[in-house]
Image (tube, rainbow, N blue to C red; front, side, top):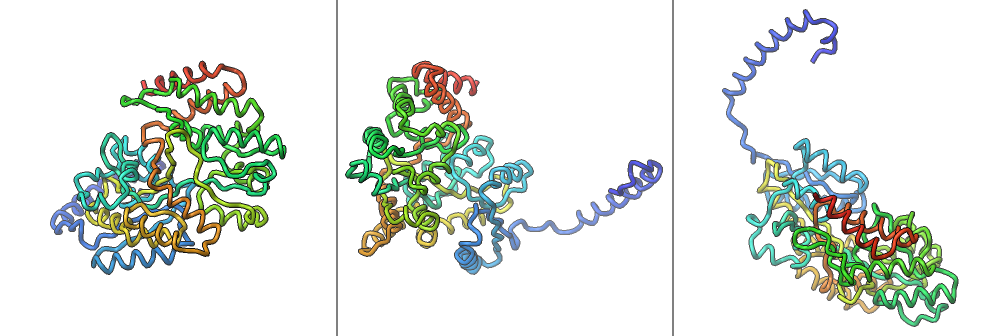
Amino acid sequence: MHPDWKMNRIRTWKRLGIFALLGLLLSWVISCRPSPTPSASPEIEFWTMQLQPQFNDYFNNLISTFESENPGVKVRWVDVPWSAMESKILTAVSAKTAPDVVNLNPNFASQLATRNAWMELDAKVSEPDRKQYLPKIWKASTLNEKSFGIPWYLTTRVTIYNQDLLKQAGVSKPPATYEELAQVAQQVKDKTGKYAFFVTFVPEDSGEVLESFVQMGVSLVDNQGNAAFNTPEGIAAFKYWVDLYKKGLLPREVLTQGHRNAIELYQAGETALLASGAEFLKTIETNAPAIAKVSAAAPQITGETGKKNVAVMNLVIPRDTPKPDEAFKFALFVTNTENQLAFAKAANVLPSTVEAVEAYKKELSSNTNASPVEQARNVSASQLQDAEVLVPAMKDLNKLQKAIYENLQAAMLEEKTVEQAVADAADEWNSSRS
């Protein structure tokens, strides 16, 4: 529209008459032309999260292979920074300009699944295709028993530990359970004056503490989505973390600093344990070579349930894509066994198909001269059988974490009793749902 529109109404009305005539003629021309076929030379737009430029060669080859096997179909790859993905995909979905295939994680994708943003996959995925994937991992991308995503790559936490610090504290092996962790925390503090570990209680940060509740046998919500943690098990889990804080076995900064602080403290030699992905050992080698030399990996710490955490990356297909068949075919191609195995090796992550996991574990275990990073990857892969997404996809998960973390903090600062903090957290969550 002309920029002088508001300044000259007379000219505008004249132009509107001309525009109306032009619009009529244009609509007649368009109506006389044959309608374009939606599937003719379709271009699939594929978004990933922060994988350029490190994996440019992998994805360029992957896309080239897919295009050669599917003549006439083109794929445009767009890589989005981690920090920008949520806002970009929310905007794109709202404006109906979303990509045809997008890389997210189940927890965030589930927030949009509650708005019917994604294609429901149960009718499209054949039983043989579904059985390719680890069952617990497939379940991570379901909401109300409906599948909205296809599993891609995985990471499971391992316990990276400083062998020297544990030795100084008289600890012969890293803790395997939360009960052992409390004992080790006391020994490390008594013998070295340092902390065994750092875990954040900042509501908007890591969900590690929330996951620990599940590992300790706590049900977070019931079948109706209401709070299910105001129980003896929930009170015991609250008390576990509150006691560690009150005994001075957690840094005061756990109330104000995020998981990034856990990394910084470990790399500085100020903590003995770090819960992270196996691939993070490479980062430690770069940032803190001296600490890397005395670091090793053990299975992640768990509770009496024996459950292990896994983080899942999946692929989702927007419901409004004009190319549903091509998008679905491409998503299955990216996540098939052959391509997952190749990406897992390139990125030091874990695959999510049954065959790829077995091949990956076999290759890692046969390496007799494995580096510390490869040993950590072996530990990580060995946990997959017991691994699951501990906090299932649900609407407003961030509000649940906020209610629990803020009330944990209140109990740690003696503003509430543990019992009152648990009851208040449950009430806040239930109120947020009404």
